[in-house]
Image 1 (cartoon, rainbow, N blue to C red):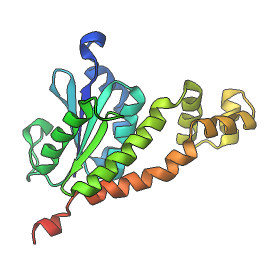
Image 2: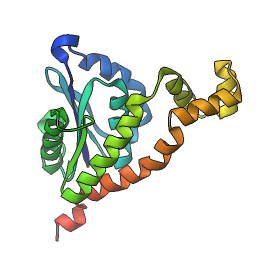
Image 3: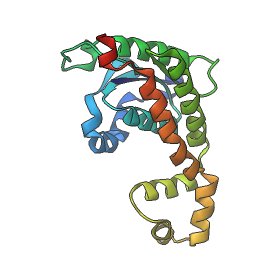
Image 4: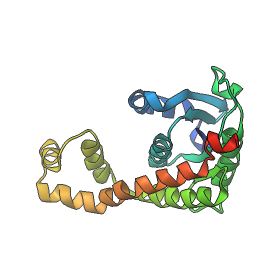
Length: 208
């Protein structure tokens, strides 16, 4: 299982943004409903947490939060105590412990990008962190124009249809795709997913 703990950066200057980001994540949560074991809840004044069943969803959400540039994100990979309680705040287990340690690291100035993974397998978690931070930096540097194309392609449009929707040429869309590093992100995401999966000890191994 995978716990995401997100802590707002600079909340004293910007005001509390937890409710705002949870509203922004409503479409993501609806699209990922099968991957959400427990929905997000505020766990402190400027922090929220949720439980996911897949590493792919955890990577996707971590990068979505990097896009908003207001969050330190900890990803915990590991087992959780069963049976699950209805509220994410009432649950525990290694994945929750790892997520707490990860978000504490993500908050620190020693991390170049504020996203960190912790898990049962330290080496895999460190490699997952490296990939998440690399992808997070790509996402954080993407321009508004790059996101326009990225969102249209993510919705299922072809580059040609995206060009028509934006009223620009196919060549202009191709340039935005290159500048936004969309192909590089697409190819690197599965690596981050596999590393995050490897950071969690499978339940069958825990039982041995």
